[in-house]
Image: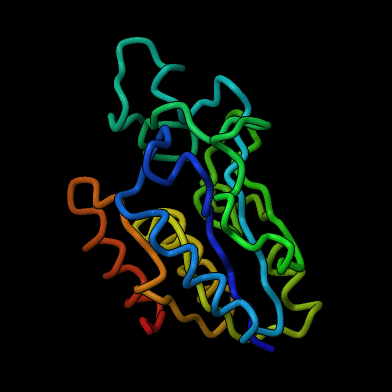
Length: 197
């Protein structure tokens, strides 16, 4: 069994969004086109409460993209984005969400950010996705979506560490590339045994 994991293809990560990834909307048609090739399709959705601790607006004197130390480690502070129930948190309108077997919402704990589809940023609190995939008999996953250097990267590394065979479709991802984050992410994924297709 081979699953497609579609990471955070949401309005706030597309052009004109609060945390826009350049070309984020360019991958949607391609993602739709490959969904039918997989045994299972899982969508992830960043789903933050207002005032989330990862927002720069929650930290007086800090600006978006500043780094701070949280109880669980270093954290990039982001513009307010993907707030629960808002248009920004909704999936891109062209994404074929009806094809999904499961939607995993992450980042809803106000005290911990969650890049990975598998764990919150404390690297201890699971989302339940690994268990779901194992129950379905999935052994191999392909990741697509936004952003390659953050949520796709963390999800791919965690999937590999959980024992899945992992591929990333670079053509169906886009990156933020914050201060060299893309090169670091590619190194981390390669080191974890992730294959780029």
